[in-house]
Every structure is written in structure tokens, then in C-alpha cells.
Length: 196
Image 1 (cartoon, one colour):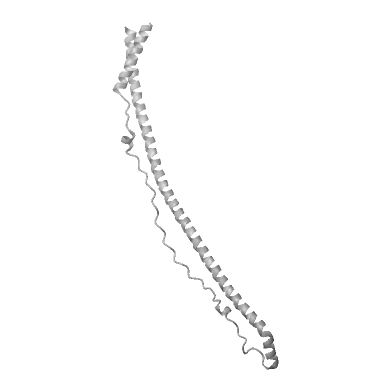
Image 2: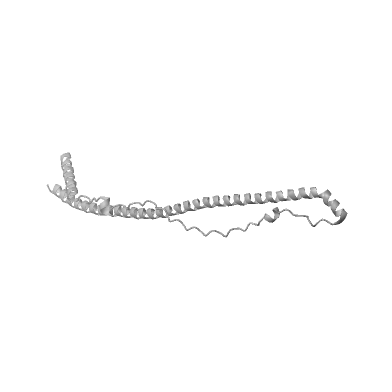
């Protein structure tokens, strides 16, 4: 009885190998089924934005009239009392006038310094903001390119998954047909074994 089983198992093994030899699974290379993969692109530098027109210059008040020395000639009262007041107060008035002129000159220098410092600060911030803006534009451009590449790769991946599913379905159908054929042969073999 065990020899008969061994013979039946050998016949089944040979039958299975014959079926596999007659109906090999259809395997295709991915490049053959899908075509070549899409090449990635290197990011391109976006075009530079046009420079905005410069704003109108600020009008700085002229401090020159403040630096002029005020003359008191002709403003002293006349007479003996006026001459006496002029003689007594002239050094004081002259010193105050000199101090006022130096103060006005210092104020105009300070105003020029603050104005120059403000211009340098604004130019520096404009450069920083310009570099940041160009950097952000480059980032946005790269993000758009990466988004396009990602969409392309996702579509490619979907095609590959569809191919795998279709190939597996095709392989499943081929295996079902081979299994039906094997069942039919097995039934015929069992009938022959039962007869003889």
C-alpha cells in the first residue's frame, strides 16, 4: 500500500512539474512594464525680482541759520546808560553768542551723524531683507519643484502597484487554471488507480 502511495505521489509531483513547465508564470521586468523612471530635475534659481523705485528723499531742515552769530549792533539802547550796559555786558553777550554758535554747530553735526547712521541702518536692513526675500523665493521654488517631483513619483508608484496587482491577479488566474487542470488529471489518475 505504501508503494502505491509513493507511486501516486511521484506521479503527482511529475504532473505538477509538467504543469509548471507548460504554464510558467509570466514575469516581466519593471522597466518593460512601466517604462523608465522619471528623472529628477535640479532646482533652478528663480528670476530676480525687479528693484522697487527709491522713495523720495527726506527733506532735512537746514540748521545753517542757527549757526549764524546774532549781532547786537544797533540794538543797545542809546545814551550813557546804554554805553555803560554795553561795556559791562558785552563780554557776557559775546560769550553767550559764541556758545550758541558752537551749540548750533554741534547740533547740526549731531543731526548729520544721526541722519547718516539712520541711512546706514536702513541700507543694512534692506540688504538683509533682500537676501531673506531671495532665500525665501528660492525655498518656494524648490518646494514647488519637490511637489511636482513627489506627484510624479506617487503616480509612478501607483502604476507600479497597479502592475503588481494585475500581475498577481494574472498569476492567480493562471494558477487557478493550472489547479483545475491538475484536479482533472488527479481525478483521472484516481479513476485509473481505482480500476487497476
